[in-house]
Length: 420
Image (cartoon, rainbow, N blue to C red; front, side, top):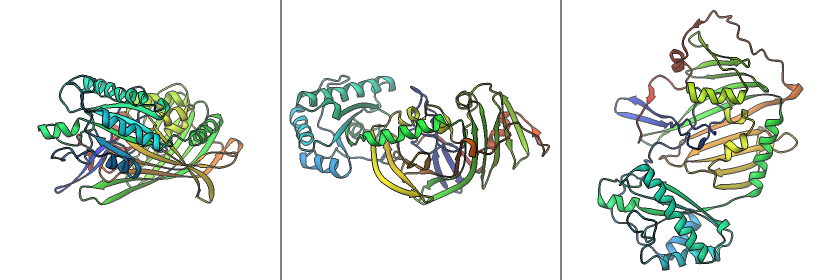
């Protein structure tokens, strides 16, 4: 359950709008990332906006163009693979193109290829998702018949969810009916290093750290703007958490003693309490499902962090070493359908996360969230913390729904917007 909480927000000032994005997608537990912060992370909007006004006929296919695109851009949209209407049966004319793809894979044995089927918006969303996956699997089977190792091939169906043109015209629908080829790398070493980090984190009974985070958004004019915050996290397994977060528009403290969660908005001197008895894992789950409130470092506080981080990952790269806060780290990069994320993991006996960058791949400008960890401590080095709430400021107690708007690090003139 890698909790996806992708905000789609607008900043209204005169005629301009800023967009960041949020989408709750549970599905088979989750699809994107929310790391180290109490704010939702950046990922894809409800529908891509990078080329939705594309028009004209599909580009002409050539074997050279296909290979060059996979070599340089790692992706290529194929329009020459035609299917019978509403079916996954390949029509005539597919043989040459399939032969070309197979030849490219044989000539470049280090490549893996992800085959993603896309449809237009005719028919139901559920039927289109099923149909697009069946078509991708048909192409995969055809490449296996041509001698390609099935372990080098992945099939996925996007249905109608990622149009590159308008579905209101015949031309646009033709462009949206396509097969996307995506070259990928699957580094066993990158997965191994991330798993080692996850296992190390899960084994720690006491953890504390401070972090500096930045949420970068992109205006309609293409200007990139950042919102910065800092905070602290103290965890005592299995059921205690104390977290703080301060930004330009928020100052919040969270305490959980195994039974009661207290959220204190210091900037408004108001607090709320909710009964959520159980472990930290249960707390994170309940906050997401019932209250829509994130917790700092939520994914990494889970005992199965690796499974949450890797769900939906199809590309993993080991980029070698990097230095963060003077600490040598392993630099790892991963791709999902909607986001790229890179994480720097400290080398040595304490493989903790030093830095994380999450970038949207489905929105113009690639909005991103980044977080940098400092003052990492575990075990006996963690100072004793008090997880009980003491109302020393005589804050007013209010309902959780009434306090939510004061816990967001975005200013009030950022409001939830519609899908773009």
